[in-house]
Image (cartoon, rainbow, N blue to C red):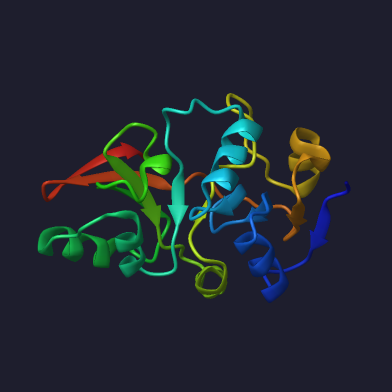
Length: 188
């Protein structure tokens, strides 16, 4: 089946994602291979499409910092202060997660990475779509896609949709860890 085309974040696309679709769309950094973080089958499909090590969790895009609670994350006072300084922004933060609620996302570990995007438009969309896993749009070991044409070469019609915002010039988000109130930079 041919992948559907979108030109912008819209209500129909949000609904499509809430129903389990997997596709390509622009994040605030790069094109991402996205799916609902709340649907285990959609998350597994992203792992398969990217040929990603199942022990390596994805970054989850969220609408606001309070969304981390949906994944078994408790943010203490120190972490909350740090998060408020970094979000919204192009910084993904690794936080401790527990319980069975998000086990399928943690890939056997005890942490998850989240980002509240810098883009207000994308944050508004996330309020409608819900949290999304959003690794870069490329198979493991390949160069990230900066355009829909590049993403199509990687994924063709194996995804459900493409949302085209032209050529992007971003780079992967900075990745930091906040464990026991300490910040550690994992990726600049």
